[in-house]
Amino acid sequence: MPKPALSPRLPAAPAAIAQGSSLAALLDAEAIDCLAHNLALASPRFDRAAFREAALTGLASLAILQRGRHLARVLRAHLPARYEDALEVLLGSLTPPLTRTEGVGLGVFFYLPHVSFVAAYGLDPAGNDGRDPFEASMTAQYELTRRFTAEFSLRIFLRQEQQRTLARLMQWTRDPDPHVRRLCSEGSRPRLPWAERIPAFVADPRPTLPLLEALKDDPELYVRRSVANHLGDIAKDHPELAFELGARWVAGASEERKWLIRHAVRHPAKRGVKAALRLRRLAAPARAR
Image (cartoon, rainbow, N blue to C red):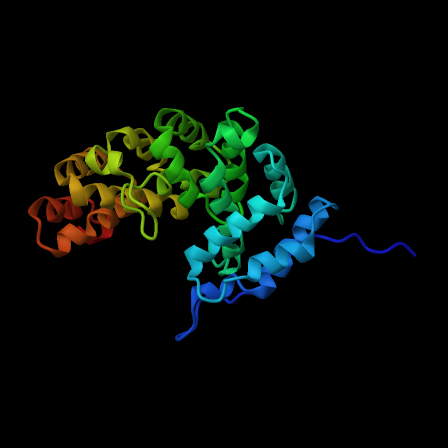
């Protein structure tokens, strides 16, 4: 009787971090074993034992983001030397895409090393035999955001290749996968929590406004919430621009868009900013009027 085919796997993970626990525990020895297993399925020549030894070395003292970067460096040392060849193995090791947007739990943090790998090496032609790796990196981020999020790696691309990256994000605003559409807004937020800011967008957020326009009436709350938070980021540095955009959006707005506007300006409204309070009144639910 033939043996059942092996499949990529994810480590066990909680739905939420319990009090006193750390997110770093999501990238532990079990996660490294799963990563080695998945990579060996994609590349029979992959040295699981050597990878595991290097991955565990120095891991214990690292926080979650540091672990992601550490494992990215270990991946670089144990995957094929040419970046696009390494990506081929990495993408070949993935589990199936997410099929829902809520209640996915914390197991998706398994893919933090993967996005950290793209962030660290995805714009360097020298590691790709002199060839521009942009297209391969964008394909990788597309696939990774369908399983976790590529918002952390995408920011490097927006900082170094703003025009090319924004053009691709505009295309992705029409993608059928809500995880991809959300990335267009979330990954380009000027002040994304946990991530490095994008100084150019803090100074002038107008290049991202076409993305928000394209997504403001997205059918998924998951995406609209990101648009609201992005607009909220803009309101911290450019309140007049944010309030002007909100006032334009409120005209003829659906109840869903009204919620987005209220959510976007909730923090300045709590501080009593008159323009924000006015917007919340204009965007009040119909039943509240």
